Image (cartoon, rainbow, N blue to C red):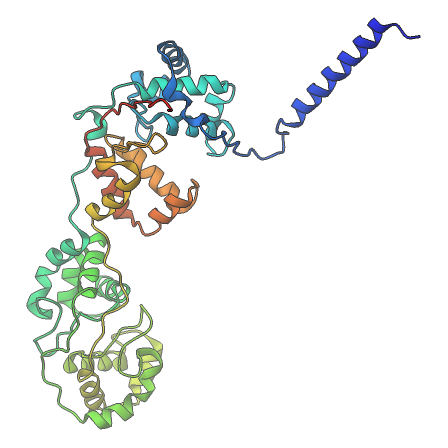
Length: 412
């Protein structure tokens, strides 16, 4: 008969080994990719229930682990490093967990929180949430001034174009092209061709040299969004004969001169004299484009005049360009989750008000490119352009950040 004491020792050792093996099996191997371990329901809100002692312990951990980058009392002095003071506790806890599991892909943050216990994460989140947020006048609030809406900016930049092309891009001067009904990509390419000398026109070259890329993009957008109409200029010629002769043009420019390709110009409603001059330029080689040169080479002046008359009589159509949202319209969308003026009242949604502008730009870029994962933010940021990101980040950085008091209502 075996000794009962020895038998008990063997059982305890076996249980200990089993427990150790189970714990090791849950650790990621050196080659394994970290995965986000989602907290159980309600775990992310534990920081709301933190006591004064918990907050004090959270401060001790934060001063040791976080303050070097995020600043004393959670107010960052480093570009692209976010303020944490007054941030919402559930959001902070979830983000710390994401960094701890490597889901964020940030080596510095991963290393900083790697060995913190879950209780420490809760207490750090509670500490930063308890602080007064950054006040106006701090570096984060000194964001760039609000930008003019791109369509309005385009209208302003296009004022010098109105004398030749008409106030809204509809030509009233023979020989001057209408600019409505054209895709912005085509307008940008055409003006750049004048700028670098591919198209010969001294006046346009001088004008193009004064434009920044932003100016040019805004001008092109402005004209693309104007209501299209035919040029208000004469168009002598035989339209019926022009229609028959224009059959060779339909493959690129559409049956009635409305192009289906952004880089191919629509020519419906275009000024007839300008149209004829453009064909002549392709024929003589002062405009370089092999397809157009070969087509124009076989056309006599009478045929060109007839084709120009046909297209001038056609109704131009607006290109498929969506009017961009203003900063106020973007912010209205963002405020649905992040609170009015970026002051979130949801424990799990981050406050944006008063945040460092460089950090907001970085995060929006990350969501737009997919480097940072969130189905909601991916959908929201899909239509953001570079100017939208800069303007939206500046908008929230200028807002006054406000602390939020959470009242825990006891269950009945």
